[in-house]
Amino acid sequence: MDTPFILRTMASRKLLHPGSPARIVRQLNALRRWGFGLYGEMRSTAARDPDRIAVVDEDRQITYAELDLRVRRLANALRAEHGVRAGDRVGLLCNNSAGMVEAMLALIALGAQAVLVNTGLGNTQLEAVAHDQSLTLLVHDDDLLGMLAAAPCTCPGWRCRRPRG
Image 1 (cartoon, rainbow, N blue to C red):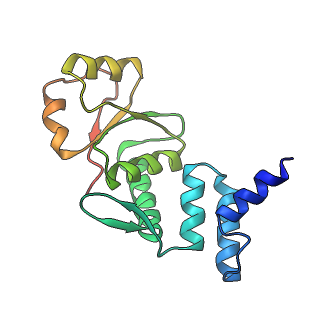
Image 2: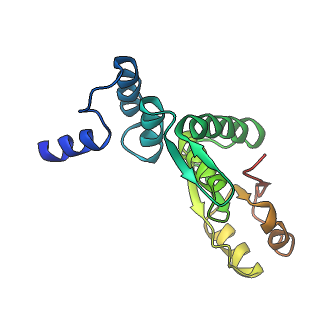
């Protein structure tokens, strides 16, 4: 066991600083359930420091509490409306934005694999990536819809969904 690593990790997550016992318990429970990956870290910080800014993009700032709520809602929608489940490979054709972060975290929450798709691909390349990566769904930004219309994919189960409501 690497004690210095564990202590540094606990310090960076504010576990060694005094805080509300209820928040610390929620934070530890989130880490226990989700682990030290991206989704576990987000859930842990949302439990410990919900009003802290999590993501900033050109349009908005989102706190950890807001991010947590939006991610869980999107994960539920992806499961209910598109049947996304653990092991599915889902493409993200998104610009760098809070929406992309939300979509990636929602996929991780479902146990799906997020495949980041280059927004600069040509029509043929986009279809080749979708086929080679066995994508079952493509989440995309509205402004990239024209790119999809020009490259209709023939992959089984190919569907598209916008990450922002």
